[in-house]
Image (cartoon, rainbow, N blue to C red):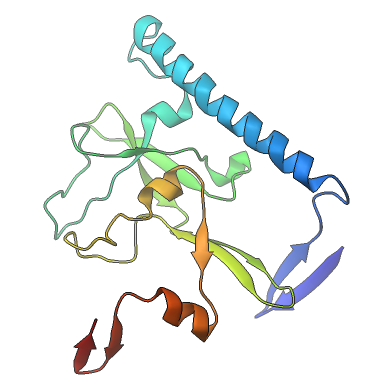
Length: 182
């Protein structure tokens, strides 16, 4: 076990296990996929047998981007949304997500929780994976308005580019004040 102090935040690091990580990851993936399948069966059963049709967390807890400046100003069951496979932090979820039902909706929509999640490997070369709740842009017409929403809802992360060569290799637009070039 190693304890590091980075910008007064204490970060605990330890291997999940010493050996067998490939088998561990294979089994974890298998169980995660089985949970997804079980949830689908549970939602179908619930729709038929349970008033309101919801018993599983992911079937009723949704991620939907709204904006006081955009077209969608309030949560709406008829607008696109993503099932969120996450839970409130007290339940042990790193990806803290809390959702509530409004007076106008049957489904629960996320209103509290993490807006940004990062996992960082401080090895010889820094590697990080991150996710934003919806996307980088606040502009509803941008492809980056909700481009991370589905990944967030599934509890997945994307690569974060830290080194200049990685940033340049993956950039979409290069900007200098007063001059925008593609």
